[in-house]
Length: 199
Image (cartoon, rainbow, N blue to C red; front, side, top):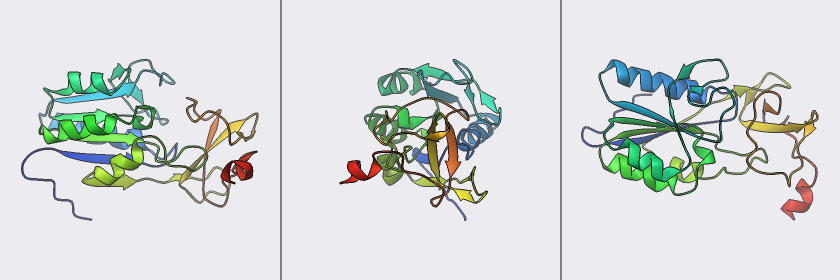
């Protein structure tokens, strides 16, 4: 696929997919290339995501990059203004207004790269990501490897004591391999209470 970025101004890129698909790693790769090109780069992460490091963004494979932990979209806008390229990791944890922040930065001339889950553990659209996907110039949906069958995984399964989490559970529960698996459509299990919730 040939991609032609705009000749003038900024734009929005979204890298999405399930857990363990390499989203953060791909975003870091793009940001590092921008740094090599001499561009001013800044990376943000939600403060609640301290799984591997309080400050750095760290992929499940151990790839890391220094980041600025923030509590919300307002900090992103305030601190990103003098930068050419802005990365926002785990964007699904931000409030819906992060969409307007990303668009404001892109309209101001920045290249904005957002990375996050497009679906929650129920396989429902997750937070601001669906609107970011609709507004982005470039979208990449990555796949992981299904922990059950080895096929291409597009969903995330949350586990509680080794079993699918109840459908009524909290949407945001920060965790890693001890609580989550990547699953394909056929291997994903909806969890107790899914039928009642859908009715």
